[in-house]
Image 1: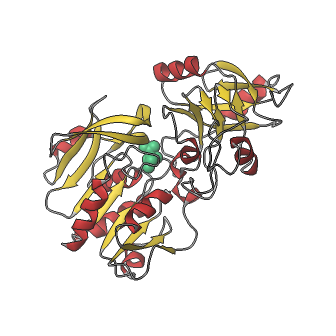
Image 2 (image 1 turned 90 degrees about the vertical axis):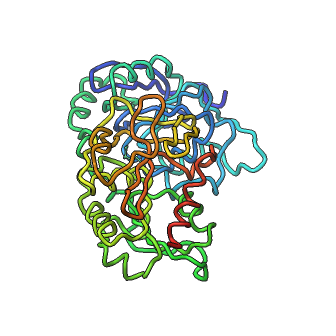
Image 3 (image 1 turned 30 degrees about the vertical axis):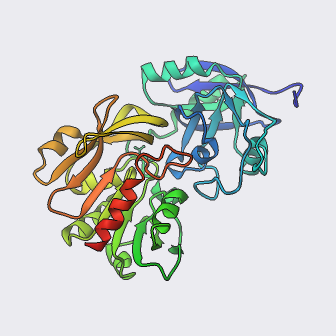
Length: 367
Ligand SMILES: NC(=O)CC[C@H](N)C(=O)O
């Protein structure tokens, strides 16, 4: 064991429940966020750097985290976006040929507080029963009352606009400028692997900040438009909803993933709601209602689109349904060149069942 004596640490939930653990490494500190769990057995580096997790404390249900180290290429954004990490066993040692640093080094570089030796099975089943809630992780184990007061000040995820916290400040380009297609992407928290997946299908992308207008995007003269994934509640994202409305009004090719899917639903007047617990993992079963086929998908969302309203909408079709709870997993507009999914076809490290959605988008650009 690398550290003989590690700081005691706690997870304090908003309802006062406490779980005990120890700080990873020599770290001390306190970190707040909405506590959520991901069931992926691999992909921790991609999860920690996914901008959609901004403001969340991540519980990994996999019992060992860190054992395959980290690699500079396996990030979804330039820094860690979760606000803290909770694990059962933290691996200080790692073994994998193409790793360039340990997870501990990666967390240190990003100054992220992590705690281990937590009974994550008990914690996860508690959250599953009691629903998503705010929490704090801290090495201030003797200051529970003080932490409770601070925790009470942390805003709820519901109603929270977070895209502005993670979006690019300036527009930038991605891919080969001589590519056949041009795509304008609105960055409301975009993952790098989405850009890689679009670019590798012969498209050059201009990525715009969350508050760009339709006219800003249109000036790039794109063949199609993309609305990204991202953190927080879709409801307050009125600028992005306006961009979606303008694109839909003109019947231009539009594809949205996760937060982008929710924004497209809202642009069509469909409400979104906070789920009791979100979907976070890489084994979520979805049924494609058009083909009748199942897909195993990667998911990360805490909000969802109202299914009844979507089904009652004359111009919307529910194209994909989540098989665990019958929630909306995909939408298409009947009279427009517009579709979206609640899950992540770009999933790195997989599964890749839903890759075809990027091909479908490229086909739509040709129309
Ligand atoms: N991955 C995402 O885009 C997440 C969307 C939204 N923040 C949610 O939690 O539902």
